Image 1 (tube, rainbow, N blue to C red):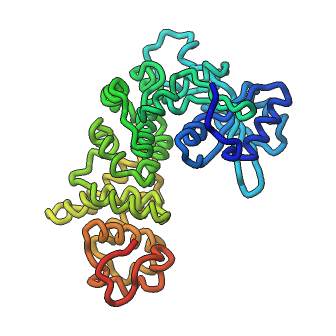
Image 2: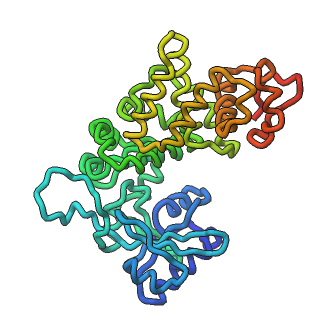
Image 3: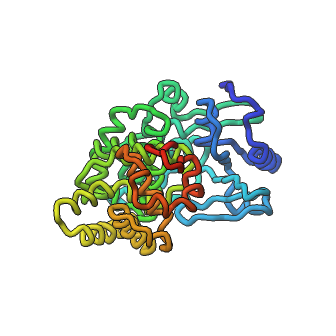
Length: 380
């Protein structure tokens, strides 16, 4: 089938990779998110290539490449300016060829090679299962992804109950795309998400941290975490939350829309601060509470000791900000969280004890905040 994608929209380095692979008699296509975004008239963040060349063969063709990954071996092809074109070999679903009769469907290795149709059908969502041949301007669609893209619908490829048992992190990815693209989640897919959400902790904690933080810093965290609550993800990953954090997430989204850098401690702090303040105001031991939360988060989503320490410090600082904090290594994170909190509450910087303290640092973090003496609101 034809496509309305224009040649001028294709990244020149990705096109060079495709042409070079084809010159060596290998199939090669643009794939995944870049095809989806081009069809949605969005500018892709990355251009990924899929091919039937094995990783070792790709490495031989491109001297400017390196093989990475264990669970999923692929090639990174490097270009000037630290640019990378990710190039992956067509895969088949390893669950389709497993030899044992185990009832455990969790996929640990994903290096079973296949053809383009098998590769499409092993992907997570129909809208991410499209391929594009820029040589003849052709969309290859084995999963009816174009239909769902036109309908603005998020649908799992294959049986969602099986797919979420194979890899529960797919649940977080669906939430990410539904909130980012403002698409609806197909009903059968949504019901399976609710049913298998409790399997999320079976995945590698580092993968959970990566996807969870992406949700927080996506500029669409408010909608993402509304879906998380609906399907029960929040009760599994952070059951300690006792107070609604929607206002904080709205303020966080506004900050990210202005390209303000948000660290992992600040992102998690936006979730935890309302509960922390509630615990403190009700006379409970808030220090013990946050220590327990950090220890639990370390087990669930692999939060490092350094980030745990920083998270504890900035939560305590926001509830009692003092001038001495400017000399601490975590001051800028504390300041960022504090400004997000003030904005979420509609409070003024004028009445804050730290306004004079942060005058030299404010422009580095929030260059658009008014710093004159008449400031009454935070201007993003």
